[in-house]
Amino acid sequence: MADENISDLIEHYLKEILADNEQVKIRRSEIAGLFDVVPSQINYVINTRFTIQNGYIVESKRGGGGYIRIEKVHLLDDIDVLNSLIEAIGNKLSKRDSETIVQTLYNNDLINRREVSIILAAIDKDAIDLNNSDLTDILRANIMVSILNRLRYER
Amino acid sequence: MADENISDLIEHYLKEILADNEQVKIRRSEIAGLFDVVPSQINYVINTRFTIQNGYIVESKRGGGGYIRIEKVHLLDDIDVLNSLIEAIGNKLSKRDSETIVQTLYNNDLINRREVSIILAAIDKDAIDLNNSDLTDILRANIMVSILNRLRYER
DNA sequence: ATAATAATAGTCAATATTAGTCAAAGAATT
DNA sequence: AATTCTTTGACTAATATTGACTATTATTAT
Image (cartoon, rainbow over all chains, first blue to last red):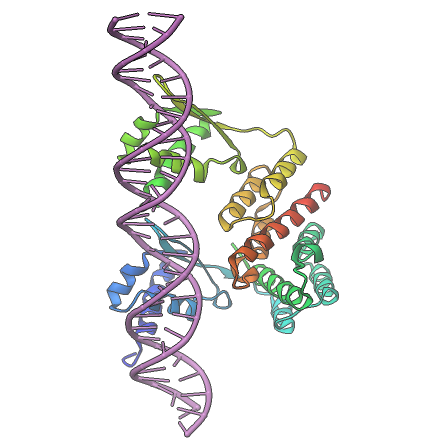
């Protein structure tokens, strides 16, 4: 415990609060001041230690009264399918593969018919077409991964 | 929810009244005085939080006995809601407006909580960010319109 | 009636107050 | 030595707050 760096200390500080609460809402500069680090280090801690993979979602607001809120989410038990799909996607995804994935989700009862059509609408060719098929495949991958990550937990 | 900014407090104050009433009629300077802000901040709150997309119409009158009236709007049916939202989007859509739209869909029972989160995941900043904020707004608009169109006959 | 004045609300740009990004430098680990 | 992780700070972005100026409507005076 003695040889922790400051990012670890900040991480533990926040997780201690999260042990008793579903969420923690902070003012970035306040926490930075508390640990005597620059404010952007708080972002570093969040980006490296409070990711969705770890079961946290983060939202924030700038301007007066701004904040960062970290929320603990309950990761579902049976998410092997999702994890392997996310892994398999990588950074590009063809239309054909995306349809296969949606079908897999449906077959595994991870989404229903309505959700199928919402997801297909989101990655619809016309919606994400930018006259650059590489870019379209990248976007399709990003959007699909984002949705799959969302399906990993419930609130 | 103690440490919100003043604009949020004003928003909640008005929405609390609107929870029990179809409309609320205020004197701008009175509300400004109540929260100790300049009168034009009331306009800021209205312009950012009581837009037509959020299901409110606002009308006002100047001069003696002047007022601002905020009214909850009743769209006739689901199709109307979807059409007016699609119309309002145009070809670009900010993150803030997109969240308002999703909220409106939910308030009108057009989507459920899970669908809210799937849609938000689809238009998540990280998913559709291409280092070009104009492009991001265009993509967000495209995807949202695509989903709204799907919801028109998926029901 | 008309003109002047008072009493409102609206607009817009400047400023303040937050958080986010990114790349470089430094430290720790392999 | 190379690689990865941490720390820092300059710059950017988003949101809120403020106030000077403008526009509209009502009231009062002539």
